[in-house]
Length: 170
Image (tube, rainbow, N blue to C red; front, side, top):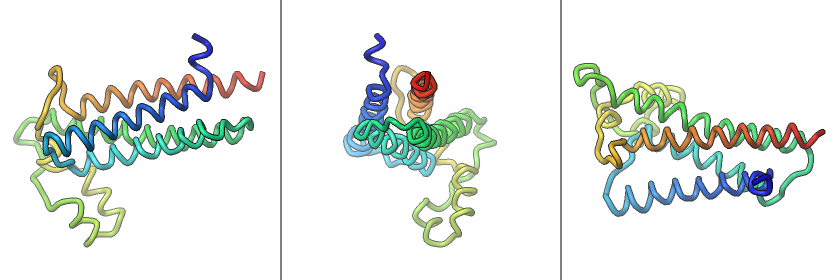
């Protein structure tokens, strides 16, 4: 078991989870089922990609320096933390009563073309009607609920990685 939870193996696990998550989103949900991602879904994907990028760099180079490992871990944690927070917000929007759901507005591309970036973030996090709709479920869970579970597991893996980093100095 200890061999499975080495620093490098945990990073490889994070990379695999990012690849599986993005493949599921792009190839199954988007291409096969024809579901278009809402702005919150896109932001979740960005967080997963950031986490996967930092994990890939860590897995490939397996830095020995505790400082480099901590910096890489922090970047990865920020990515998955972002994705988790966005997924939680998305789940919250989906569970609002119908009369409290924000109305649908223009799409993310329009906002990016016409608004300053901070205003885009504000609009996305305010949510819209499209973010509150449940288009597909698996085992009674919506896509954001499934994502929140996956991201929570990945946060736990980050705790294990931090434990490895701290333990490596002893």
